[in-house]
Amino acid sequence: MSAEFATAGVVGIGTMGSGIAEVLARSGVSVVGVEKDADSATRARATIEASTARAVAGGKLTEAERADLLGRITIGTDLTAVAAADLVIEAVPEDLELKQQIFTELGQITRPEAVLATNTSSLSVTEISVSTANPRRVLGLHFFNPAPVQAFVEVVRTVVTDQSAVDAVKNLAEKLGKTPVVCGDKAGFIANALLFGYLNHAVQMYESRYATREDIDAAMMYGCGYPMGPLALLDLIGLDSAYEILNSMYKQDRKRVHAPAPILKQMITAGLLGRKTGKGFYTYA
Ligand code: CAA
Image (cartoon, rainbow, N blue to C red; front, top):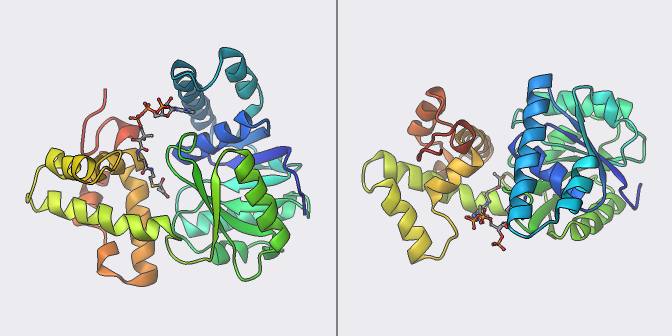
């Protein structure tokens, strides 16, 4: 098992994958990104360019560091480009079959000592891992949105994950400036298991017209000191991702708090996905 990760593959460069690629490249890791088509690859590059420009504007990076960082990331559409990577992080949408298909292929094309990680938010890492020939080298590495800013990751071990893979990924997380915690493979891990019932409840409150979106968000920001209110946070996460996470947790634990509020599905159908489409609970310029 690799103790050091010099090269990483990131499969799926959407909201989370682009942030993960940025974080890795910022710490000197060479990143090979893979997207499903050329348009998505171009969009992914633009997202990373915009995020790193913001980091420069905020004094978090110099222009020279930004140029180096961007130079360490290549994004294409061919999965075999990650064949030589020491670590591959999958960050495609929350679709078990899709993830399993990717892991089956990764198991065939990557080096036997490479670590394979999934950034799944709510699916079973174990179910994903068994689609590879060697589940011992598979674990969860769950980042938080926005990945370049949130200083925390969950490292999820299954009952068969090699301890050396867990240790190596914990070391990497620290090198990336994140605080890692190790947890078992349970729906939502630690943070989402606590967070998503709360977010769903806020949507139900909004849906029943009990309070306005501004008042719901203000209560949690100014009353409870959260950096943003639950509806603004859902717009950041993406309503489609939030729905998939709630649905997956509900299927696994059958807790009513995780049964997605009906309006979420309606908003998704209408294309109101949050920041990524410019409109969700709020409208973005
Ligand atoms: N790299 C490094 N730093 C960056 C950056 C980048 N690419 N982009 C922005 N920053 C820095 C900024 O310079 C700024 O730093 P200072 O505070 O030191 O000035 C800081 O990040 C915040 O940036 P902004 O000023 O642009 O934004 P903000 O102050 O309004 O904060 C926020 C935005 C970070 C999103 C904050 O509101 C927040 O933390 N919200 C809660 C987010 C949260 O809960 N995330 C978890 C979601 S759940 C999840 O992700 C799990 C899942 O599975 C879905």
